[in-house]
Length: 167
Image (tube, rainbow, N blue to C red; front, top):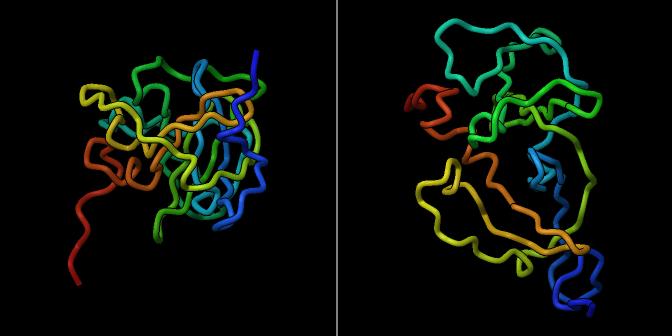
């Protein structure tokens, strides 16, 4: 088997510095999000279910006095509910001035990616969240799905926030 030198997370090509991405697992797939959106990572913990909330909203948790909705991305993407386990974590993201928790099966690692390494994803209009896939990357022999997590979690179909009020 030959090694594809065109894309490597550790490549030392000249040009803009790579950005760091947090990679994580949902079902058997590896996803990545810009680490700058991550506020903190917490062990999975019980949430309080809110009546009438969308099915993909697992509930809310109290994070040092701030009520934070927690989204089960597996459920939103049609991959079934995330089962609690030893590797399940809540990634708390900061979206402008709001916090949102994202339940994932497991964390992998932080990887550097160059913008030019992110390839366009095929158009799959019917797939849940397909409009929020920034692209795909092959890094260290695995395919990563790079998400626009800010766009996804602020989207109308996520139903986490009402429309922004104009100032």
